[in-house]
Each structure stands twice: as structure tokens, then as C-alpha cells.
Length: 476
Image (cartoon, rainbow, N blue to C red; front, side, top):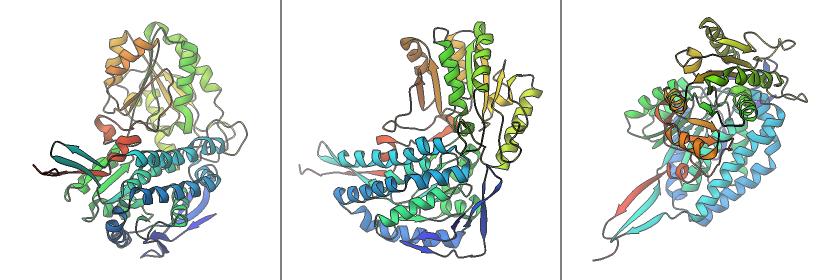
């Protein structure tokens, strides 16, 4: 059982302003408590922001080499605590142990290492004619992060913010907060000056609203649902602060008729279901030629039936539970809506898998003969549910792919030049060709209602910088 009932503010673990306001964090595999945290409020946010504001002048004035030293210390501490982080993620959000160790934990480390490499090379000043363009840290950053890839989403915000000279207040998801608390311990052990990194646990109304509205917060970075992102943007508007958001997705996976069909369809199923389908960039809409719909459906069915749903620590488990009862119920409702709309249920369906009555387990579900106006093709399900949609030709595939309010990611399989031509037409922040993996050096973020701004790489680093023009830098 984890017990994190204090917050990390101004370099110390401090009691919340309201001590009795606690929350049990539920292990989704057992439906039993995994630990307890305190829920903060406006007074806690005020203290944390004040600490970050006071620390900003000295932290932002540090030399490049000094900040490099602090980042290297965090990286060493992270490496030493990798096993602890992976175990926490398994218990708090149900990721299989193998996935927590192979992907969740290393992803966070990767973002710190990427920020370090950019910091070592980044030019914070450039001369343009007789003027100088200077990049300076934006200030105090409020960070609100989700539960689905928790340490990944924390690290891709915290690492560049620290590297650029910003100070911050982090509100991790109250659903999966333990990995964030371990990171706070790592930061503390790395010896960062008091107030540079602060953490306040809480929910959206209690802490998120106070943080996004706060007049001394210069920037808000949020990852989560589009619905919540809209509310955050409105909260931040009165103080005209920068808002960077990575929101929902309904990514299309276009399988061209010259692709290695067996491999591409099976890989698309696996990619959709990984992390129990709880990924904003999951390829949840598989687009296949109408002439090959039956073939794709058969391949997808066989691939889905190879997915092993089980306890996160069990040998052979492919996917674990979804994160909560609320998430389970939402997914069940959307599966029912697909059936009611007339989509062909190929595999899975409503209810829990046999033998897994305890825990928020969802059957790996495949629908075929889906059209793009069905709810299951338009709403982000955030569970192991795949929709297969037929298309007539490449132009039709692109039209269907772009017919969505989202634009986070896209996928294309086929001969390289043809796939590249299709990729250029997809309106999304990234496109994966023929199974290409994510690249932490390249920006991640979305078009349309999938958000604004970018994370990861140089572009994510620059989200935390302001641009100052010094005119007359070189005397005439």
C-alpha cells in the first residue's frame, strides 16, 4: 500500500491545507485500494505557485552547465528507481508488468535524456542583422497530466521545462499518482533548489481549476480529454497565459491494397489494443479496400483472438484491465452502441472475459463494416475496440481519415512512395508509415480538436521559451 498524503512544495514534503481530504487509489486489477493520497485545494496551489515564482529568477539565471548537471542527476536517480516506477504504474493503472518495464518506465527516462541532449546544443541567442533574438524561459508552468501513460506524459513536460529554466507546479492524475510521487523523490534527491519543482495532488475542480486560473502561472501544459481541454483553455483565458494541449484522437490506419496485408492488419490490431487501448494515438479506425474487407476482417479476428487478457503480473498477459469502473462502463456503452448501429461484431463484445469477473477487464473487440458516421467511429473509446471501415480508392481513404474532429496521429501501410503520398494528405500531427515507431526527437501533438502546441524534441523544448528581440544589439 502506498501512502502519499503530503505534497512536495518548496523543496519539502508538507501537509495539505485540509488534512482530512484523502482519496483511495484503486488497483484496477483487483478493485481494491492500492494506496491513498491527499486531495489539495486552492490554498495548496497558492503555496506551490508562490514557491515556483520565488525560485524562478535564480533558476532561470543558472548557466547551461549548471542545468545540465541537475538533469544528469535526475537521470541517474530515475535509472536507479526504474523498477519502482514500473511497479507503481502497474498497480495504479493496470499496465502489464512487462509493458510497464519495457515501455512506460523507459519512456519517461527517454524524455529526460532527450531534453538533456537538446539543452547541450541549443542556441538561446541568434543575431539577425543588427538585432539579437534571445530565447528565454516563459516562467512558472502549471502541468496537468493524465493516467494512461502517466510518467511519459509527466516527463515530456517536466524535462524541457527544467531544461529551459522554467519552474513548475505539477498536478498528476489522481487516478494514477504514485509514479509522480516517486519522480518528486528523485528530483528532491537530485538536489534541485527549493521551489523549482512542486507537486500538488488533487482533482480537476479542486486543483486543476486553481492552477489554470492562477495569475502567477505563465503557462499551462495539459494532456487529457478534449472536453477537459476546452474547460482549461477557458479558465486560462482571463490571464492570457500560454496554453499547450495534447488532447483526444481517433486515428486512422490506412491499409493500402499493395501492403503486406496479413502483417499490416495483424500489426494494426496489436497496436490498437496495446495498453488496453488507452492511448490517445491508438490506430482505432482501420481503413481497408472494400474488395478486401472480408480478408481484413478474418485476419483481424484471428489477431484479436491471440490477445491474452489477464492479471498484469501473470505470465503471457498481453493486456490488463482498463483503469477504472467509470472507464469500463464508458467502453461497454460504446460497444453496445456499435451493435445497435448495425456494425458487424467480429470478436469480443460486451461484458468481461470469462474467468475475470473481478477487475475492470474488457474483451478485445473488433467491429467490421463500420461507417464513419457511427458513434464508434467518431468518439474516442479509449479501450481495446477496433473499427474496420471499407474505402473505394486512395482518395476515399484520405477523405474518411480526415473526416473526424481529431487529428493527432495517422498510420499508412503500403508501397513506400504511395504510402508517403497518402501520409502527406492526412491532417494529423504525425503519420507512421509501414509500422514506424515513435521518435522522441520529433514533435508530438495534434491538429484540430487534438490540441495545440507540440511536445517532445526541439519543438517541445521551445514551447517553454519566449522570444525577445533586442534591437540595436550591434551598434550601427
